[in-house]
Length: 193
Ligand SMILES: [Fe+2]
Image 1 (tube, rainbow, N blue to C red):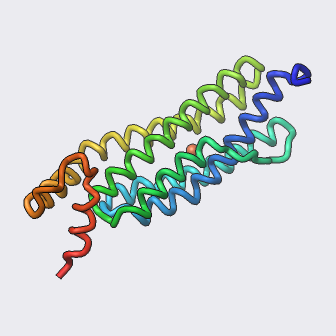
Image 2 (image 1 turned 90 degrees about the horizontal axis):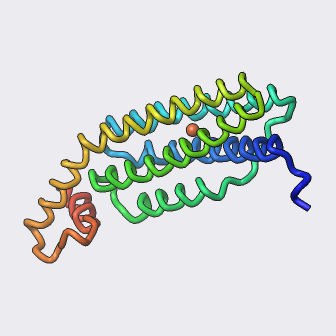
Image 3 (image 1 turned 135 degrees about the horizontal axis):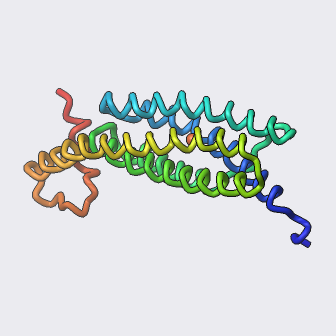
């Protein structure tokens, strides 16, 4: 039954998945930017939001190159990653600890995208769709840069998250390292006098 499918069909399905995942990420990045505390992290999410909107347009151009109307197909993979990120946003107050969780969520999304575009570029190349492969490569390059930026931000911001945990340890000897810092975040956010 499924053997009538071609590699081209599988590739088009990948494009539908990507078109949907980018649209989901437009919404998610808006939320992540407003949940971030550190201005550098906020800026990183905001500028990748602009890139992601641009990527939606680039994928529409890919559909045009394939003589197809742009159509998405629900991407359950990115939906799960976004859901996990939303849980952190709901459970934690704005703090360096939430910033640490947001960096983790951002990296999970970027790696999903990097895997997805690497696979679809290989398919486009195999199918002889050189122009399409180049367009997808331009998107992949943005994802790789964003992932690297998140690594730089981790090096800069994780010490702040760790220090926030130390502050809470001073107040509460029962706040062990395994508590994932949640009490520290709460304490911090509620002690604004
Ligand atoms: Fe993207």
